[in-house]
Length: 71
Image 1 (cartoon, rainbow, N blue to C red):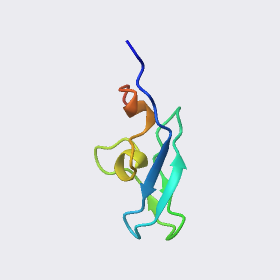
Image 2: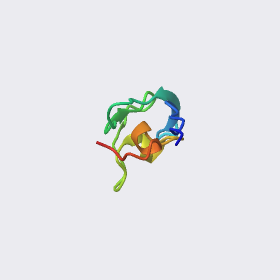
Image 3: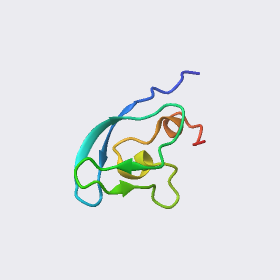
């Protein structure tokens, strides 16, 4: 069985001001907080999501991409 290709780059979009930023996602943990570089709002995951990338980015976090779930 082939391992899925994990993408580490994702574009996160602030729901408050619409600012987009290309970020590298951590591979060893989910990121629960993210500060927008433009308006400085601190983002937290939406209810039911494990991290800010799963809520506001173009790709889910690496553990979700791998089918492992978040830790």
